[in-house]
Amino acid sequence: MATNFHMRQSRVLRKLRAGETAIALKLNLADPRITEMAARISGVDCLWTDMEHVPNDLAVIERQIWAAKAYDVDVLVRVARGSYSELIRPLEMDAAGIMVPHVMSLADAKQIIYHTKFYPIGRRPLDGGNSDGAFCNLELGDYISQANDQRFNVLQIEDPEPLNELEDIIALPGLDMIFFGPGDFSQGIGAPGKWDHPLLVETRQSVARLARKHGKYAGTVGSPSNMDDLVAMGYQFVSVGADVVGFGQYLSGIASSINRSSGTGTDSVYGSTKS
Image 1: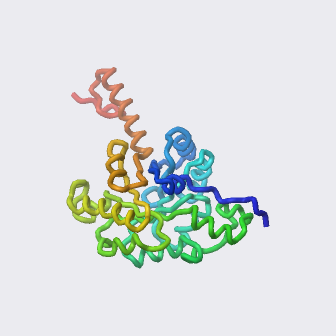
Image 2: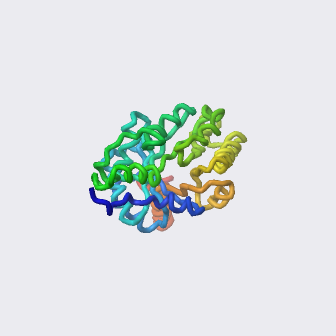
Image 3: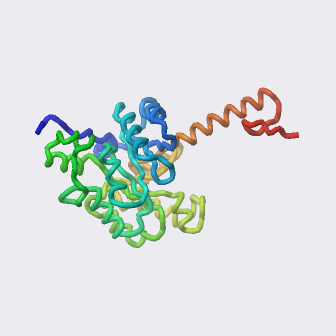
């Protein structure tokens, strides 16, 4: 068995373990050239791609991982809830991490950790014949230890149901990052989009505080304008934007410029003219 192979180290974990902030950008678009553009130009540490809300299949995700790895950028895959295979397949394609949405209880969190970490933490199914195991060129013990050390799970708190067990969830051995999702949380408490709702504000603060207390990393969504506030609160992983938002703003700017130049009074790129 060759001994000169090593699993690619996670850029996110490298920064977090050095006490720095890791920055992510969410990708909804599937084209790996978009992934390459983001990895090469944006300067972020991680590209977060989605299988919960976006119809990406594993072949798309694999190409995104290839594109990002070329620039030493991590890919974090938000998986769809399902069997254990849904959790581990992105890892075996060499994604740096997986994000699991809507963790609803302590029992739920324990099951996720069980399936995403190898012995002695859990029982992630063992193979090593894929990219993460250097196609069977990593010695088994090295594969297990490097995967547990360099691949991370992210559990999302985006519902009120797990709040009574929140500290117990965050304290679990084998949990790497807890991620607060304000959008679904606001809906779950009956206040969609009310970002200043007292329970939302309190929960956002609690997630960061408890993560720090138990030596875990806290992540959330934000923007360049409020990133400093989130970091001061204790968040070390912040997703600051999304490809579709940026592209949409670019297209809207073009439409506005055309409308101003032509003086037609159109209010969309399809030219619906106001009388």
